[in-house]
Length: 425
Image (cartoon, rainbow, N blue to C red; front, side, top):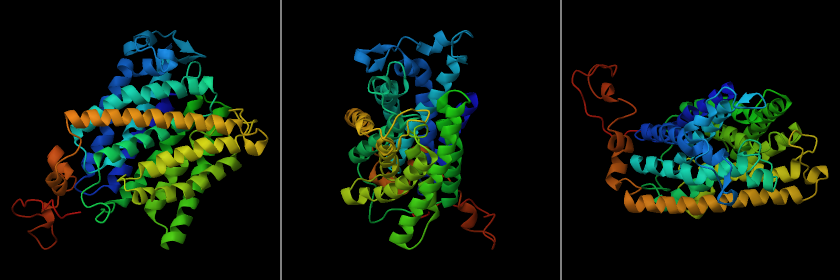
């Protein structure tokens, strides 16, 4: 569990690279800072009250865990506090990594234009009021109404993590508004090498995410691990096929996005389907998410790095397809339409997905509007033109001064030269 926790923690720096590479060169540091900042907000809040809200005894009719039950994790500090031989503190550490990266996922939708301080406040309140309660519904196998009440299958967080983050990204992008010049002047990713590296680290860490959700090194963990491999492989195929047909060229960004789409879709289903079912879910998610990223152009919402198209669409695909591909001989034990289980499981999966979307959508809108009214959400248009790295952090991701003057090889300018931040990429 500690190894799995470390793997999931690595996903957050991987996500920072994945998003940072897609950003403008004068926005890369801000984008990475938005992701890394979730350690500072969510990580601290998780210890104080987050674990209690997610895994405490039911309060408010089962919508929240008891916020005082594990306050500051003090009741988990005795060596004897264990569940089935696993220290509860190890489980708390593992789930804390989930909370951190879920909030970080949202940041990709609002790149280049959101005030950093406002993001910090938004992320803290959103974790408190949205993520922790939904984690209680989905991950608390004894008390959560989605997990134990209606018995929806979500092994590692398709609803609590991906549908949740994707829906929040959609609402926040709508309230924040479009980037300056979008979509006619949408900037290209400034570093696709960084994007590919980030996708690789995400895939590596995802084995802790999915297999680690078994909470012990057993057959269920092995089962989830293998399905996580094959679903991601077929998702790459699906995405690249769409690109080849639609654009005539398969791209590295498409391959990296296909990796994430497959990982998202198999997350809820990794212990519920056969490897053949995992391959089908992965391939369908690659196709669906490749189409899904175009929704922002059709409906006019500026989701900068396709959090909606990949995480919301991919999360819905994986959650709903369990209703078709679930095999009753799997560790999850549920049966879907294709294995004689009828339509009941599909209905349960749809209820879980819809409940998360509605709750998240309403609460996210309220939080964003309150922050907008009190602090403001968006940087000034002039600051956006100059670059959010400079205006929000007084930094630049790249130093171009050595190439502006001086020796013929472009290195070693004799005098410091100001960086032309308005035009560089």
